[in-house]
Length: 477
Image 1 (cartoon, one colour):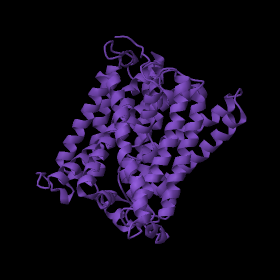
Image 2 (spheres, one colour; image 1 turned 90 degrees about the vertical axis):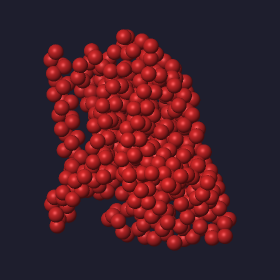
Image 3 (cartoon, one colour; image 1 turned 60 degrees about the vertical axis):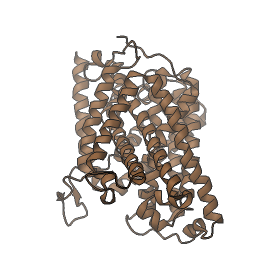
């Protein structure tokens, strides 16, 4: 075993990691969520996508400045350590290792399994499922859960045993996933404008005021975009493996962010050209694909969606495998001597990768029981009040993301204090915009998720207290 990662990735791979990690399932199923939260108000939905994208860009620009100055093991942890201090860097790394990476990874594994089964059952309607597809078997059936676990193990094997192969897989799936998005964006807009029904014009003209569902539809919609836009920060975990990282990482973050925003907005508009907002709210984007491209091609595009989700899952597993290593390389966390080891043949922190897979298994079990099959969905507390909710049930696809936006804020503040050699734009303007965007995301989460925040924060507090105990123990050793 050795304890150093070699530089094996170039700029193109880094851009593909930013784009590939972010563009995955979120744009496909969160588009439906945003329509539901705005009650089909297309302009309001587009505004939500724009706001979410701008928040991402402001944060990217702020971290791009830091990436040109700080380079160690794990991008965002490096920035937290250099600006706020070593202890804060440790807590940032602990949170990402225990909660952030694995929760997002398991959700992407489930979505990959879900869309795979949608493709299979569409091609072979008589394909046997324990729960028929018409009754939600592709979503909640045991086949979906088993396939989800298989995908998680496959992603672990690829990343842990052959990081170069994982990088090639990331670039390939990134190119593949842009095909359905690009087709729907271009063809959907043309059909929606020039077709007999002028569906796109009709959907914009009949936009409702969006008064149902939530008290603040725009805030709830922006919160929903957080999942679709999230993941770019994980690309910074490879800065120790990126050639000329101080030059290439900022370029990859900025170029990747611009590509993502343009793709999302064009796709969202294109989908509205293929089906009415009522159909899209009820059935999702699949109906638009089928209406525009026909049943056969529409179903093939479902396969592209599954591949897209697999690419994002692969990128997230990249973060999972390196989480404990980023702590151990600093002498922090549980048993740093064990997790700092890097395998000579694969040049991967194998022990760290195994822990990442185990954490995925834990959060996968929680996600299945709490969110998919809603095992304790009837156990409500505070009934009859504004705080009525299901105990310890929260959206694992959004709340950890909003947490990390809150944790960005001290980094931006300390950057403004320490970056005395930077221009006013890079030292003050961009970080202030990033802080405002982060605060907006936190506020949107509080309004959009209400009591779910309470249950999630309890779990978050317990995890961080465990991290404090482990860190204190190692610091005494």
